[in-house]
Length: 591
Image (cartoon, rainbow, N blue to C red; front, side):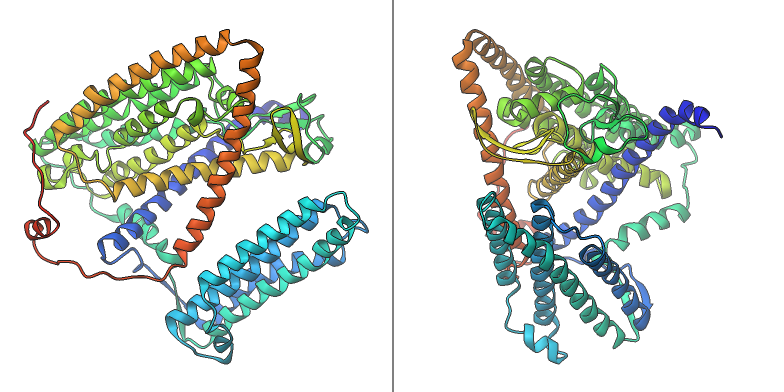
């Protein structure tokens, strides 16, 4: 195929590639959510978790598999250190390798110490790590990270900067290689002593096994069911939520520059791209948000068709509940976005993210809208505490009671994909999408008002990749937050669910529109002083995000390495348990 012919098909190939990436991301994230949901449920309810699916490997083969990735990492670090190292390494390279070295040291020490504390001493190496607390190793690592970071930033431009740069660029790769190889050899040594080693991957194999089993399970269709509608209902429910991410951008546009010249990618970015650009978005349409809401509404049809076609009273009740719930909360879902549209002034999701990058994140300019949209999005996923359409204690399994095998898996999996797509949209609308605090097109730029406190130019490709990783991290964080809510709140009654939508969320969303309109008018009439104050407040919000992120990181590390504490609880009937906890409160039902 000639180059001219290839250029003709290149736009279509790029769209197909981006669509495959979006579909694989949403489905992979949904699989991880399935694993995390079961894992979290096993911890909260003290039951068996998804850790039983296992692939047994011979011990020596497992030892070799443990060594190969470490050898590759050590080889890459050694290659950079010996062959590709320049005479004058950049401070950015030194900072990156020093941070990687510190991470590899404390993570390896904490992992070995945790294994020794749980399984006991089995070798002389275990004796060295017996007295180390995993939490202490993690805390020391975080302190070392901060000291190294502030040392590079504080000594930047001084006479000690060159020495620190050479030290980080020279010792960082060596320490990284030693730590990774040490952890790998320790793992290989323990694997080689066993005849066979179970590969569980912390329980991730269990969702994979469930998916494989669903393919081969019997596809039961009730004799009196509408076979055609019964077959297409899972497709109607699954397909729309899979393509919803088409209008959500994963990152800033990638400036490719002049064809054949890649210097634009690896050089410092500019405000305006002078060459070709690659949009990290499948569908770049003006009505992006309307496209999302229109496709999200199709999920109602799949639930209703599945419940009606099953010819089962429980399925029909579940379908009616699903239709009433999803229609009610879609009204709130749309109205909560009106305030955001008044601020952003566009329906294009990429331009909304660009506005937040230039001003402030949507969660600060629309805090009430964020809360309302988040609550309505959880209700749209039909998961606890909004799982009325599939309440197993009342209507067996709701609208998919008569489904089995892969058809049931499509209904089930569609809910997890809905969690991923809603989290991605919330991230783009209210959490800045791909934007990171104090990052712009040129790199890291710390400002406060008109004063530039620190600036570090970065290659354009690095800035874009950091944005993509930031967007994925925000999306997964929101997914995890929905799992926490799923294991925290009990199921609503049907009247409570409808009252929350029509009497609480809907009036609050209308009030949010009115308040937003008033604030927009005040900001428009404020003049230059108001504009300067808002710019200063935007920088303060970025400082708040950075501080909250550091605090959350420290808290998460402490939680991971915190020793397990067991508390005795009453194990009896639900009535006795509720009485022991102080009783229950009841109210009369009311729509």
